[in-house]
Length: 343
Image: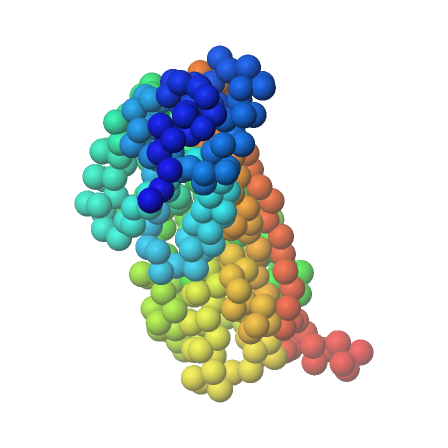
């Protein structure tokens, strides 16, 4: 039979209230008494009942994470970071999967309430302006991960910069016909990454004096098979691109499959660059933009715990860096390589 708070109090020679204060880190206990109670807690292997602790603290002792599409590797990595940093915090983690627009709206409306959770982490789902006001209500700490909203605490990356770096890499190799495959640039979930990476892609072309070709941008539902179809369309054009920038590594896998289907060699006939640097990217030798997936999840928890310690602190925003990782799927276009050999 497991030990109870009464067992601890009797063994330590103190009252129930004193044990409760020790468990809840109250300063109203002398160091000697605190240590005696802690020793007994360890000896009896006493675990405070979550409901009792919640009542005594006036908190739920839970943190809710709202995340879209658990099957996406980038989301999984961020959730790993969240779980790793929250594990020893004393808070229980509740994870809500969002796969429909209706579910998104319900979660962002109903979950950030102090009777449900002490804190909420929102991954990749940028709130609309009217939702921001509700998320800023007193009593609940909210942190955004992978998206930026002025006036809210968030940890994010600069996707426009990432798109620029990816496109700049291809331009520096000598490519002039560069395509971009992404999710739809506007969608009811209010995802922003594909749109921001597209802006970086366009800016890099402009800075290099390269005209933008409308037919070189294809968008569709996120996934490897849709990207494979879109890449096949691009590679069937009369002036097919010599390089394709995919807005995620998952979509880049679809591009590689499309190239294989029509017997194009990568990178000799086609250069491919992805985004995220998920685990399989290294295995495939995929050139990509690495973003700190695990780290943004972990840092989001740190920011949330800081706000839980003092809800009156001003919101902060932190931008984490992206990095170009060059592997085997990008090279100079074949014509440029042949010219170089003749010289």
